[in-house]
Amino acid sequence: MFQPNNQPYALATQPPPASVQGNPNGMDIVVVKDDGNGSFSHAESIIQYSKKLQDDLHIIGMKIKQHEDSIKFLKSQKSKFDDSILDLQGKYHSSATKIENEDHSHLQNEEEICGQILQHERSAAGILCLLKARHGTQVSNLTMTKDVVGIVATLGKVDDDNLSRLFSEYLGMETMLAIVCKTTEGVKALEVYNNEGCIDKNSGLHGLGASIGRALEGRFVVICLENLRPYAGEFILDDPQRRLDLLKPRLPNGECPPGFLGFAVNMINVDTTNLYYITASGHGLRETLFYSLFSRLQVYKTRVDMLNALPCISDGALSLDGGIIKATGVFSLGNRQDVNVRFPKSSVALSLPDSYLGAERQIKELKWQKEKMAEDIKREQTLLDNSKLKFDRKKQEFLKFLAESSSYASQHQINSTQSRMTPR
Image 1 (tube, rainbow, N blue to C red):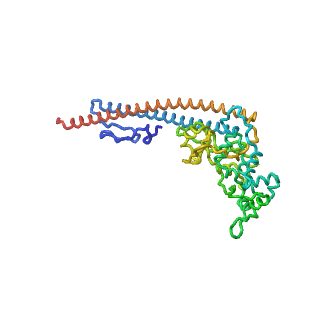
Image 2: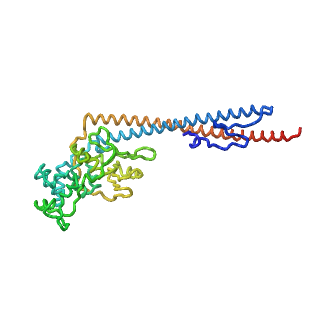
Image 3: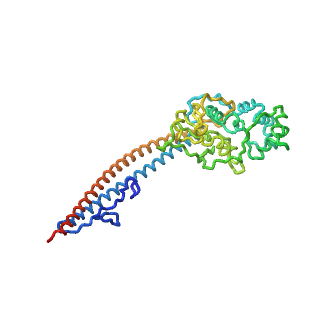
């Protein structure tokens, strides 16, 4: 853009020739004495024409700045349209690329997930599920389990079976079976140690497992919500699921990478009771548990889309056709592993008559506005290119004029000197 002295389309200040003096107003003045032959009149015309060229450059430079500002504004508006479209898709679709008339009959419901967990008989999650199956809500009254929120696999739901498979494979069986507690005290209650620092097999989950004939084997993961660092940003406005308003990935041209569907943390449906005030600080499961598990894990339509977007991926990515990037520079290759404990089907139907159709209309309108914005950007870019071309031409004209006027002043000075030295 055109700003004096420090931008590409501003003329650099050059020291004036010997016969040219600097003017505080930024205009060079050729100093020539009137010798009676019209030299002073010619010098005045040089000054006037120089000022005209500088004024022309200034006007063109201001036009360049206006076009650049317009393009910057239009691109920011276009980015907002992109974000709004993605947010609407995330709010009413667990997966933005569903196949029409897809058969969802094989999706697992919550009871089936609990059945899968129970197959891991000697796991901590299996013991808790069995206890809940036998005693129902009374389990929450036990000192040992009153602080337990649940098992990771039962605390989130998805509407797409493929996403459920991908998320469970990404997290792994150990994490899917992890027990989630609110506080450190709840973690301590699950496992007790004797004076020698060894596990007390008669207390905590170990004692409970032994009492029902399912002795706990191996290690198990427990996640303490109060010790997690929660998401500290904003939430998507008016979203009943309180999805996180994460910054969308951007290519150098400002566009979202092709095939980007959203963030995994926002594709998990959380029960309303777990959206707020699960921790003492008032946080829900999305901004604590699931943000800790998925962070800014991105989801793409295909592996090709995911790989093309590598410069935009900071916390891993998944693709619907099975691609997995665990972290920056860490790729998971080979055949997919089918983890048999997955997130259950959401209890909320995908087809929400009024709100769903309203969202579809909004998305179409936003896409139309985005296309119009792209046309405006293209038109402004053409005007900008033309203005830059005019500026360059005018600049060359100005520099040529300065060189010629400097040559004239020098020659006039020589003639004047010779005239004074000639005897009368």
